[in-house]
Length: 546
Image 1 (cartoon, rainbow, N blue to C red):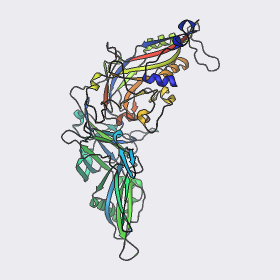
Image 2 (image 1 turned 135 degrees about the horizontal axis):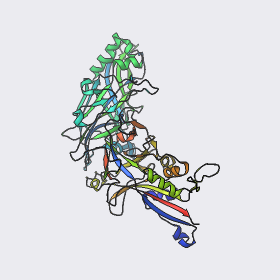
Image 3 (image 1 turned 90 degrees about the vertical axis):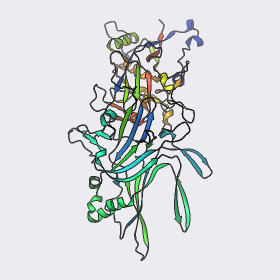
Image 4 (image 1 turned 45 degrees about the horizontal axis):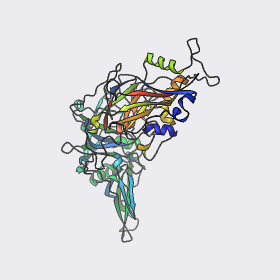
């Protein structure tokens, strides 16, 4: 494990000759570079419902261009058949959706937070470019089941329609059979802020207790006071004449179909933040008063909605003129690889048919009859050479180093993680599963053996090392399938759920959902280049001496 950890950040070293002396050891070590094919795959329509969290805002990627993310979500009452009492009057309506924040410091009773892990677009001076934020009633019903799919898994999925050249800047999605334009489905404007910017400040809540103001501080969140007249008419007044609207979930969602939380750029700029709508603290709370049983007095009460139910992100991508994302050369590979969340991924074929057979012949022990020897008991193939370490070496294109640093001196790609997955079976690699470095609190420092972090090479550039040792050992020993690998960017390598690709042009039909929540992009060297930074598979092995 220690050797593996070192190999993530440094070159793998051959130590037998230093320890024993080459002539005194009974084995030989060597390393080989195996040719591979890596190419681009354009992503047009990806599943954008069922995500663990949601992006909101505008992000200008210096390499790729502008992405605008909005949210459409159902809301659900936490209780049904309420009794609002006599002369109920709404005092305020508060929407609260937490950011992904963490504590930066605690000094006495003062707690300082940071939202840097989920904020995109902060400039070098530490300023956050604002956006226009609007919240509308949504009139489109987000159904649970797909009426055109009669199979066992007939849940309704919704897919991105993000290309600006196609959607004209509208917030559109696909349901597999038709286009849904939420711009034409939006109802009444409930809230608007023409200069909104996310804040890391703790939120202060004041409450008067026995004539004394008591303050409470809660973690940073999108917290706004909404129009009381709208909720009075929509909930209280309608419930008086039609109580079935709050009798169960289905009736309410058919009556009130949700919210369209829309982000727009200001002067072609803005910022983007990751929202935790799945949190139990995400809610819309109606604060109201009603007549008390004591004459002349009023009682304070609340009625709460949460964000369970269908929820999706809409994306609008305006790519830079120099970026032309297309499907790559699956035979010869591509010179450059473009990884951009929701737009493009890369595919790696480790071995073609002939190369795979050559690889197997080199490592397995022949039985002399066209087959290979197996170990008694396990049935695993016996090997004449043992793989100590196998790494996919990936270099970053130098253009990524030309972009401005952030206010903390970090370059643009400092926190990029490349997530490599089994694209044939839509799951993590076996090296990922066996990686003991999982970190559930800091995903940037998680799985650092199997999914190496970006680091500087000897020439001042940057590269990644992805561990594929057990992936290859499974092919050799257990005759596992030589599956294709997918490469995407991820802000959370612990989140390995999949999102469906709609109408994929090949057998790859899924992508890690975490890549959709990564607004940044990167450019890498592919396999079809004469540059010394071409992508390669490097294998370090040990072979016993006869």
